[in-house]
Image 1: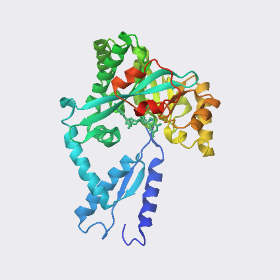
Image 2: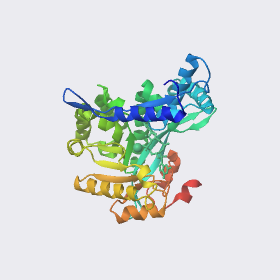
Image 3: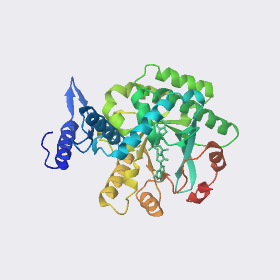
Image 4: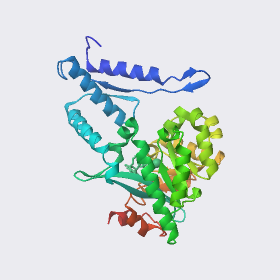
Length: 349
Ligand code: C2E
Ligand code: CA
């Protein structure tokens, strides 16, 4: 844009572009949804040359992607530091899988009525030699972009399946293991054979596993992945829609997709009791899940207030810091088969 009166002019245009992009596109009987991530840099504030301006806008765009996409961000100098850090991490990430640098953490899912564990979610961590434990927020987006997510998810799958089989073998009951799955996996022709091989090699029963796919990824690709999801479901593996409420799944998709569980996104849980819209959304999702006969889990439950609201409204399955943070396998092992009564203090030790 030329002759900006104020930098908010750029924000207004960015908003308009995002609004225009969000309109569904109809192609050959398919409905496609597109979103955008916009980075904004300003002349002369963000350095003079065209190349630098583009570079700054690119850096700001990555910030927009990190913030969950479909938004815009202005460049600021602190972003350069983050960008350098990112490039550094990216190079290291590509060499990390062979060096055994990843860890799987586990977070319990609890039936809050009786305090019993119903399942655990596997959450990957990068155990970098010099930087220590790096959370997925720092590398999953990049792993998705480069395709590195495919070998990474398969590594996590093998590791976590081996672990729960070991627990079952020694008489512990970890319930159903939830694995996060990138849509990129579902598009691979070899995904079902790979899945079957991993189940066989680890001696894991399909009913011990649930695969979680985010609502945004499902909504955008429902037509293309329904066959693969059906095959997964026919194997006996459960399918969960993660971050439910943030996308716009249609009733017809909910009906035709083989979905066993909806996970209500943490953003709706965190303001329960303080934001009437969130209260209504959560109530509506609970009713929806019941009428479609789909299980429901609330994510990111942190307070007694949120927990009581959910129980009163019929959602008893929960995952969140109120019970336990994600933890290493040896710690999780000690916490299998115990009763959970808001044990946050226990996992701090
Ligand atoms: P997610 O699937 O939504 O996983 C739940 C995230 O919420 C985890 O973050 C967990 O630590 C955090 N969490 C759980 N309870 C609470 C709470 O009460 N309060 C707050 N503030 N946070 C809570 P984490 O481990 O950093 O993982 C972030 C995301 O990275 C995951 O979000 C998932 O989308 C992705 N991810 C993690 N592991 C994998 C993996 O192996 N493969 C793929 N494809 N994605 C993964
Ligand atoms: Ca998840």
